[in-house]
Image (cartoon, rainbow, N blue to C red):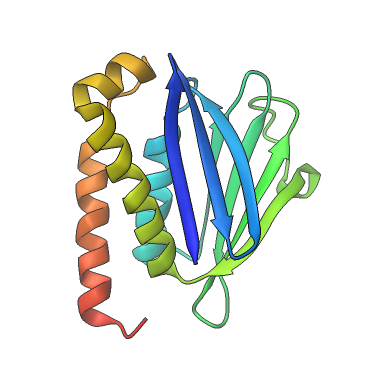
Length: 158
């Protein structure tokens, strides 16, 4: 089972724990990117039928790049790559792979949904903005993610 825990841990800093079966990693993000918004948008894209999406969690310095790709079985391949430089625009092949799992789109979407809800319940929209500094809680994206999950649950057998 895939679990994602996203926690704002200080002014403009977050930790994200990703676990799947016996594999678990912790990555961080700074306010330089809208990390939670990017994560939610990535889940929406996959549930919307995108075949591939990538987005970053910006660091100071460095980047964690999430690379999600639809595979033949209808599942997704999720890789998280680490880069030493921020905004280097290096190709994926130059990143260090720190996680590679396969899951299904709905499981990924629900894991992101649960992570976002926990943040919203803990901080509220106003508290999140105060703590995260640059980016408000992505409420519209969160609502859209919820709609996509409901659609999948009603229209697929996954």
